[in-house]
Image 1: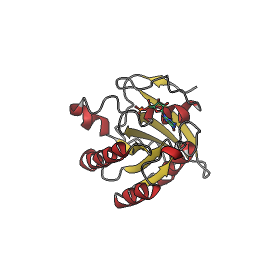
Image 2 (image 1 turned 90 degrees about the vertical axis):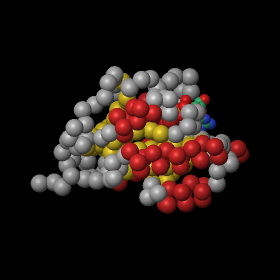
Image 3 (image 1 turned 120 degrees about the horizontal axis):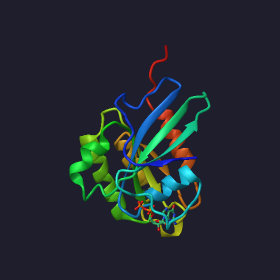
Image 4 (image 1 turned 60 degrees about the vertical axis):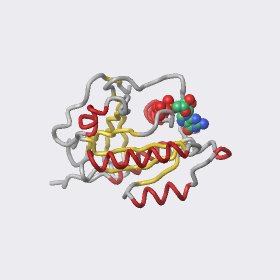
Length: 191
Ligand code: GDP
């Protein structure tokens, strides 16, 4: 079972256990309402439940995936937990993060603008080799789309980020998001 725990994991070793089994801290960023919690619930529990909120204090959810080369990657996922209101906690939140996922809602240009802000924050506080993904969520709402896919692609490219559009509702590209991130993680050199 996937566990939901209080407190943070010990990431003093940079999150790496050994060459075959990686453990990484992943932080989620993005406007409230873009679907961060739903993405995590879809990935970790395989369900879409807009009524259940995982965002609480300093909690995190974890999920392990296996890659084709038999490497496993355990994601320890930190939801923003009111980042904007608790700006003083930002350095703690970013510390030891190997991955940052910046989410916007393709029906909300404001959330896309806000995503650029989070990218700047990452460039300021994040580790220089952090793997960054830009995610356009709610891709199922194509009739309400206001952010063209090209804008997402261009922006991600400009900032050296991996880009993908997802739907937590239909599960489109949710697993792919995490698999692509896993492939981009720096590997410790094996002995
Ligand atoms: P958060 O504040 O970023 O964590 O956003 P939530 O995960 O709480 O989602 C906010 C709202 O967006 C909820 O009402 C969800 O039902 C809705 N939502 C999240 N993901 C999707 C999606 O992929 N498609 C659609 N149509 N709605 C979504």
